[in-house]
Length: 235
Image (cartoon, rainbow, N blue to C red; front, top):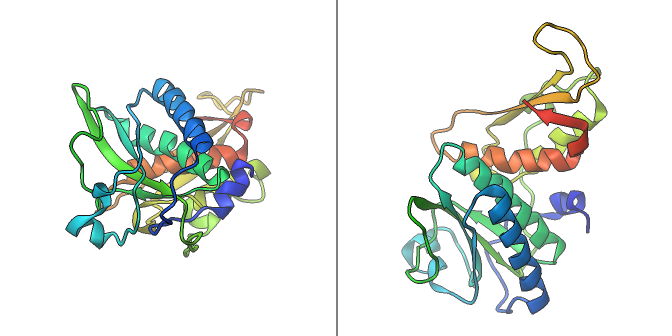
Protein backbone atom coordinates (compact mmCIF):
# COMPACT_ATOMS: atom_id res chain seq x y z
CA UNK A 1 0.00 0.00 0.00
CA UNK A 2 1.35 3.42 -0.97
CA UNK A 3 0.98 6.45 1.30
CA UNK A 4 -1.61 7.88 -1.12
CA UNK A 5 -3.59 4.63 -0.84
CA UNK A 6 -3.22 4.78 2.94
CA UNK A 7 -4.68 8.31 2.92
CA UNK A 8 -7.72 7.06 1.02
CA UNK A 9 -8.18 3.89 3.12
CA UNK A 10 -7.59 5.28 6.58
CA UNK A 11 -10.42 6.20 8.97
CA UNK A 12 -10.43 6.62 12.75
CA UNK A 13 -10.98 3.36 14.64
CA UNK A 14 -11.79 3.18 18.36
CA UNK A 15 -12.57 -0.54 18.80
CA UNK A 16 -9.71 -3.03 18.43
CA UNK A 17 -9.28 -6.79 18.38
CA UNK A 18 -7.61 -8.47 21.35
CA UNK A 19 -4.63 -9.30 19.18
CA UNK A 20 -1.04 -8.42 20.08
CA UNK A 21 0.91 -6.40 17.55
CA UNK A 22 3.16 -8.50 15.32
CA UNK A 23 6.82 -8.17 16.33
CA UNK A 24 8.00 -7.25 12.82
CA UNK A 25 5.40 -4.46 12.71
CA UNK A 26 6.51 -3.20 16.13
CA UNK A 27 10.13 -3.10 14.93
CA UNK A 28 9.23 -0.99 11.87
CA UNK A 29 7.23 1.45 14.00
CA UNK A 30 9.95 1.75 16.65
CA UNK A 31 12.60 2.46 14.00
CA UNK A 32 10.37 5.14 12.45
CA UNK A 33 9.69 6.71 15.86
CA UNK A 34 13.44 6.99 16.53
CA UNK A 35 13.91 8.67 13.14
CA UNK A 36 10.99 11.09 13.60
CA UNK A 37 12.06 12.02 17.14
CA UNK A 38 15.40 13.10 15.73
CA UNK A 39 13.97 14.84 12.65
CA UNK A 40 11.05 16.53 14.43
CA UNK A 41 12.78 17.31 17.76
CA UNK A 42 10.11 15.31 19.58
CA UNK A 43 9.85 12.69 22.34
CA UNK A 44 7.36 10.22 20.83
CA UNK A 45 6.99 6.98 22.87
CA UNK A 46 5.36 3.69 21.95
CA UNK A 47 3.40 1.95 24.75
CA UNK A 48 2.25 -1.64 24.25
CA UNK A 49 -0.05 -4.02 26.13
CA UNK A 50 -1.21 -1.32 28.54
CA UNK A 51 -5.01 -1.23 29.01
CA UNK A 52 -5.45 1.57 31.57
CA UNK A 53 -5.05 4.70 29.40
CA UNK A 54 -8.34 4.04 27.62
CA UNK A 55 -10.35 2.77 30.58
CA UNK A 56 -12.31 4.73 33.15
CA UNK A 57 -14.75 7.60 32.81
CA UNK A 58 -12.84 9.80 30.35
CA UNK A 59 -12.07 6.92 28.01
CA UNK A 60 -15.66 5.67 28.09
CA UNK A 61 -16.66 9.07 26.72
CA UNK A 62 -14.33 8.33 23.79
CA UNK A 63 -15.99 4.90 23.27
CA UNK A 64 -12.71 2.97 23.07
CA UNK A 65 -12.55 -0.82 23.27
CA UNK A 66 -9.39 -2.97 23.63
CA UNK A 67 -7.18 0.08 22.99
CA UNK A 68 -4.16 -1.48 24.67
CA UNK A 69 -1.44 -0.03 22.43
CA UNK A 70 -0.82 3.65 21.89
CA UNK A 71 1.71 6.26 20.92
CA UNK A 72 2.45 9.10 23.34
CA UNK A 73 3.00 12.29 21.33
CA UNK A 74 5.25 14.51 23.41
CA UNK A 75 7.94 17.14 22.99
CA UNK A 76 9.54 20.25 24.44
CA UNK A 77 7.11 23.14 24.86
CA UNK A 78 7.41 25.50 21.87
CA UNK A 79 5.18 27.69 19.70
CA UNK A 80 5.32 25.18 16.85
CA UNK A 81 5.15 21.99 18.96
CA UNK A 82 1.53 21.15 18.07
CA UNK A 83 2.15 21.53 14.34
CA UNK A 84 5.19 19.22 14.52
CA UNK A 85 3.18 16.74 16.62
CA UNK A 86 0.50 16.66 13.90
CA UNK A 87 2.95 16.47 11.00
CA UNK A 88 5.16 13.70 12.38
CA UNK A 89 2.34 11.88 14.15
CA UNK A 90 0.54 11.52 10.84
CA UNK A 91 3.72 9.93 9.43
CA UNK A 92 3.15 7.16 11.98
CA UNK A 93 -0.62 6.98 11.37
CA UNK A 94 -0.18 6.44 7.63
CA UNK A 95 2.76 4.06 8.12
CA UNK A 96 0.56 2.03 10.51
CA UNK A 97 -2.14 1.87 7.83
CA UNK A 98 0.35 0.47 5.30
CA UNK A 99 1.31 -2.16 7.92
CA UNK A 100 -2.30 -3.36 8.29
CA UNK A 101 -3.02 -1.47 11.51
CA UNK A 102 -5.69 1.05 12.43
CA UNK A 103 -5.37 4.23 14.47
CA UNK A 104 -7.19 7.08 16.17
CA UNK A 105 -5.86 10.51 17.17
CA UNK A 106 -6.95 11.19 20.77
CA UNK A 107 -6.88 14.74 22.11
CA UNK A 108 -8.76 14.44 25.38
CA UNK A 109 -10.35 11.05 26.16
CA UNK A 110 -7.31 9.25 27.59
CA UNK A 111 -5.64 8.95 31.00
CA UNK A 112 -1.92 9.44 31.56
CA UNK A 113 -0.76 6.26 33.29
CA UNK A 114 2.26 6.84 35.57
CA UNK A 115 5.33 4.81 34.60
CA UNK A 116 4.31 4.32 30.97
CA UNK A 117 6.18 7.34 29.60
CA UNK A 118 9.09 9.64 30.43
CA UNK A 119 9.06 13.42 30.14
CA UNK A 120 12.29 15.40 30.18
CA UNK A 121 12.46 18.91 31.60
CA UNK A 122 10.24 21.35 29.71
CA UNK A 123 8.38 18.61 27.83
CA UNK A 124 4.66 17.97 27.66
CA UNK A 125 2.24 15.43 26.19
CA UNK A 126 0.16 16.91 23.36
CA UNK A 127 -2.05 13.90 22.61
CA UNK A 128 -2.13 10.11 22.20
CA UNK A 129 -2.61 7.96 19.11
CA UNK A 130 -4.42 4.65 19.70
CA UNK A 131 -3.08 1.88 17.46
CA UNK A 132 -3.97 -1.76 16.81
CA UNK A 133 -5.92 -4.18 14.62
CA UNK A 134 -9.35 -2.63 14.25
CA UNK A 135 -12.60 -4.53 14.63
CA UNK A 136 -13.59 -2.58 11.48
CA UNK A 137 -11.77 -0.29 9.06
CA UNK A 138 -13.77 2.70 10.31
CA UNK A 139 -16.06 4.89 8.23
CA UNK A 140 -15.68 8.02 6.13
CA UNK A 141 -17.27 11.35 7.02
CA UNK A 142 -18.51 14.46 5.26
CA UNK A 143 -15.68 16.67 4.04
CA UNK A 144 -15.44 20.23 2.73
CA UNK A 145 -15.01 21.03 -0.95
CA UNK A 146 -11.73 22.05 -2.61
CA UNK A 147 -13.15 25.56 -3.09
CA UNK A 148 -13.90 25.93 0.62
CA UNK A 149 -10.29 25.34 1.68
CA UNK A 150 -8.15 26.60 -1.23
CA UNK A 151 -7.79 28.93 -4.20
CA UNK A 152 -7.45 26.00 -6.65
CA UNK A 153 -8.85 26.82 -10.07
CA UNK A 154 -8.23 26.09 -13.76
CA UNK A 155 -5.01 28.14 -13.73
CA UNK A 156 -3.37 26.54 -10.67
CA UNK A 157 -1.17 23.47 -11.28
CA UNK A 158 -2.83 20.04 -11.18
CA UNK A 159 -0.50 18.92 -8.36
CA UNK A 160 -1.88 21.73 -6.17
CA UNK A 161 -5.42 20.38 -6.51
CA UNK A 162 -4.19 16.84 -5.75
CA UNK A 163 -2.50 18.17 -2.62
CA UNK A 164 -5.71 19.84 -1.46
CA UNK A 165 -7.69 16.64 -2.16
CA UNK A 166 -5.26 14.68 0.02
CA UNK A 167 -5.43 17.32 2.77
CA UNK A 168 -9.23 17.09 2.79
CA UNK A 169 -8.88 13.41 3.76
CA UNK A 170 -6.72 14.31 6.77
CA UNK A 171 -8.15 13.61 10.23
CA UNK A 172 -8.98 16.77 12.21
CA UNK A 173 -10.46 17.32 15.68
CA UNK A 174 -14.23 16.69 15.50
CA UNK A 175 -13.85 16.84 11.72
CA UNK A 176 -13.54 20.64 11.86
CA UNK A 177 -11.16 21.04 8.86
CA UNK A 178 -10.15 24.57 9.89
CA UNK A 179 -7.28 24.86 7.41
CA UNK A 180 -6.69 26.41 4.01
CA UNK A 181 -4.09 26.23 1.25
CA UNK A 182 -3.21 29.10 -1.06
CA UNK A 183 -1.24 28.73 -4.27
CA UNK A 184 1.15 31.71 -4.41
CA UNK A 185 3.02 30.94 -7.65
CA UNK A 186 6.67 31.66 -8.40
CA UNK A 187 6.88 35.44 -8.03
CA UNK A 188 9.30 37.17 -5.68
CA UNK A 189 8.53 40.34 -3.70
CA UNK A 190 9.27 42.55 -6.73
CA UNK A 191 6.68 40.71 -8.81
CA UNK A 192 9.31 39.05 -10.98
CA UNK A 193 8.78 35.44 -12.08
CA UNK A 194 11.65 33.01 -11.50
CA UNK A 195 12.22 29.34 -12.28
CA UNK A 196 12.29 28.84 -8.51
CA UNK A 197 9.88 26.40 -6.84
CA UNK A 198 6.19 27.20 -6.65
CA UNK A 199 5.10 28.57 -3.28
CA UNK A 200 2.17 27.36 -1.19
CA UNK A 201 0.82 29.02 1.96
CA UNK A 202 -0.93 26.85 4.57
CA UNK A 203 -3.07 28.59 7.18
CA UNK A 204 -5.18 27.50 10.12
CA UNK A 205 -8.56 28.96 10.96
CA UNK A 206 -10.09 29.81 14.33
CA UNK A 207 -11.84 27.17 16.40
CA UNK A 208 -13.28 27.23 19.92
CA UNK A 209 -12.42 23.52 20.14
CA UNK A 210 -8.74 24.15 19.51
CA UNK A 211 -6.26 21.67 17.99
CA UNK A 212 -6.11 23.74 14.77
CA UNK A 213 -2.31 23.91 14.84
CA UNK A 214 -2.05 20.13 15.22
CA UNK A 215 -4.67 19.65 12.50
CA UNK A 216 -2.66 21.93 10.20
CA UNK A 217 0.45 19.80 10.69
CA UNK A 218 -1.54 16.66 9.79
CA UNK A 219 -3.09 18.35 6.73
CA UNK A 220 0.31 19.65 5.54
CA UNK A 221 1.75 16.13 5.53
CA UNK A 222 -1.23 14.91 3.50
CA UNK A 223 -0.80 17.84 1.11
CA UNK A 224 2.87 16.95 0.56
CA UNK A 225 1.96 13.36 -0.30
CA UNK A 226 -0.80 14.37 -2.71
CA UNK A 227 1.06 17.26 -4.36
CA UNK A 228 4.57 15.80 -4.42
CA UNK A 229 7.05 17.51 -2.09
CA UNK A 230 9.37 18.22 -5.02
CA UNK A 231 6.81 20.48 -6.73
CA UNK A 232 6.66 23.34 -4.22
CA UNK A 233 8.00 25.07 -1.12
CA UNK A 234 6.00 26.14 1.92
CA UNK A 235 5.84 29.92 2.45
